[in-house]
Length: 67
Image (tube, rainbow, N blue to C red; front, side, top):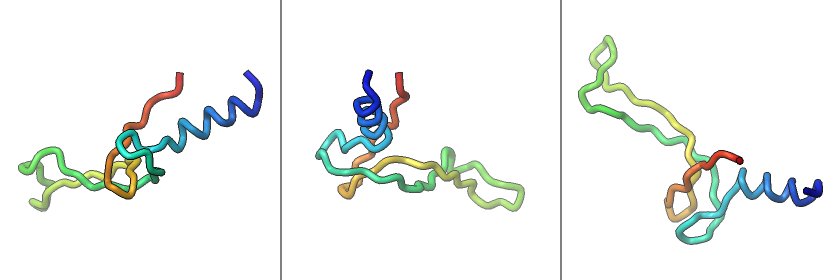
């Protein structure tokens, strides 16, 4: 595989387009909670943060491993 082709493949994997609308995606930080009953030692709900890829239409784009 040539260097230019490999770089194109890596860029496409790192910044895929949206699978639903074809628009560009960006990494966003999403907060979520797995269980509404999960609480910390002070009784506050436990929230987790996760990076996801999302387009401007708010479609989530799964991150797929390189082969």
